[in-house]
Amino acid sequence: MVNWKKLTQELERRGYLVHFFSTAQEAADYLDSQINDTTVGLGGSMTLREMGLYDRLASHNQAIWHWENGALAQAATAEVYLTSANGVAETGEIINIDGTGNRVASTIYGHRRVYFVVGSNKIAPDYDSALWRARNIASPKNAQRLGRKTPCAVKGDRCYDCQSPERICRALAVLWAKPTGIDQMEVILVDQELGY
Image 1 (cartoon, rainbow, N blue to C red):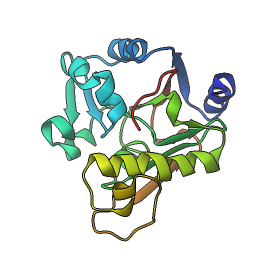
Image 2: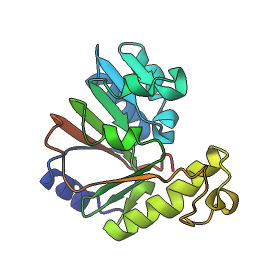
Image 3: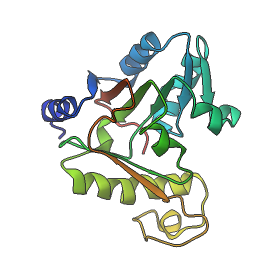
Image 4: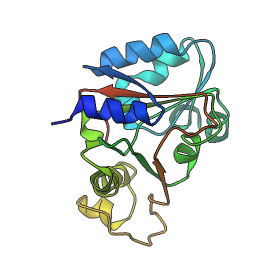
């Protein structure tokens, strides 16, 4: 069971704004109200897809998502960036693993506002277990979804630290605190399982 109070306090202590929602619909409504008439990049995220955020935001923003319009470079220069996380520790660390590097880069630098949307399934008690989750749960599921020829995609059970040319685990970002170059970084916590 997630200790939402502890997680919120730790994230706030590390410089993040934090909002908690019981459902993905409430979280989507909030984000739709906060992001208006601007450029918004979306990182490759099943969480964002499940919430229908691209269509909602594209109706009143210039939304850029490589799943919809193939524009990785444009998404990297948007004023606002949305993504999820592969693991978040109740101690406050946010972990993402990436193949291309676009998501991890955009959570560190280049945008005025960054939003992480995190379902309850992404939360782990501490840093080590959040990193384990990112490597052994999120990454194999993403490799399977992408149809990659990697041991983790075939077996779906754990990371094999493979050297396959189709490996999707090529960059790791751990945020210990909000980077100073981003004006606003917000973590949207949702008491519902979302994405991988």
